[in-house]
Each structure stands twice: as structure tokens, then as C-alpha cells.
Length: 171
Figure 1 (spheres, one colour):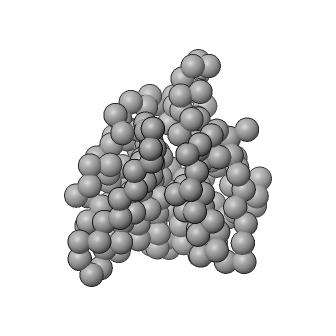
Figure 2: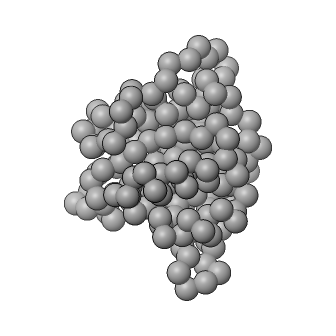
């Protein structure tokens, strides 16, 4: 199945990138584009989001609309300037799958010593093997991205998303 990539630039100030690789979607945007983010269907789905600012990150989950959580963080976490969020196009992710994804990303960020604004390690929920595989299949290649700057790392991540047809799983 081919990847679908949409770049939304309807006005001079919004810069929202949407990547599809069925059944997954990934949205990358600036904090300033929050008003535009609420207009895209992906923001109404549940999923995982990562707030990025300087060298700090926050990983969260939305068991309802992602946009609702982003709106809360817009007020409560003023330090972030960019975000990435992802989920399934069909919206089928259980609470246990969201817990697993959030926990795995938090663990990975801690292993590479990225400063996190999270107060928890992520939730532990029972999840069967098939649900684990289904959830982890949404993640990107199990790779570490390093570079001399945030922009360099971000460029490598986006390049991998754009050029790869196999997003793989965390190992």
C-alpha cells in the first residue's frame, strides 16, 4: 500500500504536515497552528502526542480527541513550540494500547537521556500479545535519531517517515 503525504498550507501562518501509512497517521505542526489543528479529522481521534520545545519533551496520550489534550497543554505547558501526534485512521486503539505506546516512548526517551516533562513512567495495563503487536506497529522504525540540533534530528525523523514504507516497531 502506498504512503500518502499531505502538506496543509491554506494560509500564510499554518504549517501542518500529515503523513499516512495505513493504518497509521502522523501529524507534525507548530504550537501556533493549534486553531488550524482543530479543523483536521486526525485531531478528533485518540492517540499519542509529543510536545517539543528546546531540549524538553512531553509524551502524552488522548483516550478521546487529541485536540482536547493539546488545548489543555497550550495553557498548562507554555514551554513547547512544536508537536507530533499519531494514531490509527480508524481510531481503533484501546486504553491498554495507548498506555503501552506512551510507556514505550517515555522509556525510549529516557534511555537517550532526553529531558522529559512527564511526572510518570506511563501507565501499566494488561495487554494481550495481539493488541501489543497492533499498537507497536504504529511506531517508526525503532531507530534513534541524533544530530547537532533539534532541526537536524527532526529532519532525519521526517525523512525516515517520508522515505520508508516500513515504520516497524520498537525493539
